[in-house]
Length: 96
Length: 345
Image (cartoon, rainbow over all chains, first blue to last red; front, side):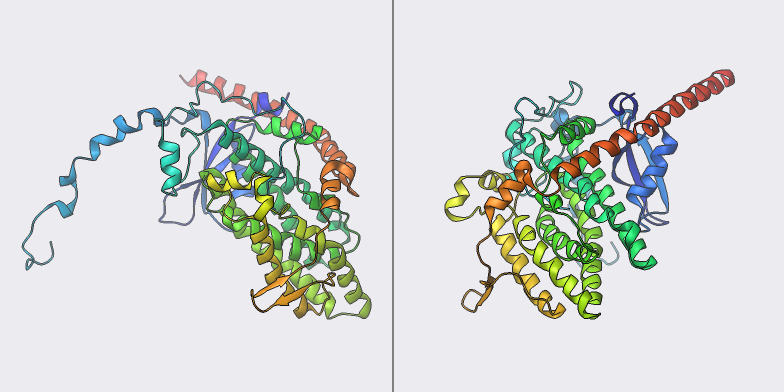
């Protein structure tokens, strides 16, 4: 069986140290989750880069579409009142 | 181990397959590509991009990936004969890094809608290139030092600017590679530094390695592409696209300026009678490079072209049973899991 037919793509997430979230590091091909995890250990944490790994089948990820980027994210653009700098506060009021 | 574009693939009609229908690579609003480039922002996999930009990247990243994995061979040749356990452990770690760098790069290429297996097929058929440097033989242990010092040194010079390449996945792969590569260069220099302080025979061996690797290392930056030569190659377009940040000649000059004082420190003589300091420009000027040799090696006539490719193909074929077993195991395991899940439901 060829690699093409048999080995799905996995996305690899590494937690660099306790207290930090897992961050996307890259991807690799592997026949199953266990092998993906072992290969990710060898490929992405050869120098102590992580204390925990997630492997996720790339096919299982649902991503926002670049086509709909505008319609999807623009609604947040005109809501400036969600930011603290929007508000007029007297300059001599402290701790606000 | 490097990122020079070695020119077009050899066979026509082997271009990358078009993106799968569910991966709209060119789907974003028109004009965004130029806009992103103008603001020095990164292009990401599903952004709109010109087909020529995509195919240039596929070619360059594939050549780069092939160079990494073919680059395992000249040094791998010395693993069993490393002179101490320390040197052996270092060399194994370095060769393993090169395999890893190849995998990062194949992954980056795949984000452009090509398949790693297809790229490997093209390497094995000899239709896609890799760096000419790996078609030179590693004759002595000192060559392992010369490769680390000069070949990885030249590679770093090429790859650091690629960390700011306009294509996000390539740039991110390069950041990882550059972090790991600095150990490669330092271990090579240290190896030669050790030999140069050893016996006369050891120092002579180090000099011989420098004599053989210096010119091929300068060729790693590719043919001249400034002045008149700039119109001939891919450089102008690649620079406009933010794939390339400096010309081949600029990078080569930086490498020479960096390396000459290091050779002096080692007490080795550069094999270039024309090498001279130009106080006015503040640069070391080197003699003419034999581009005829470069083209011959690129065209297949290097000392090891056939050997490198045959070894690569054999390794791939010999490993087929492992890949098949892994797939069979995964399939059997998946059946078991779904049965267990089924019975629990």
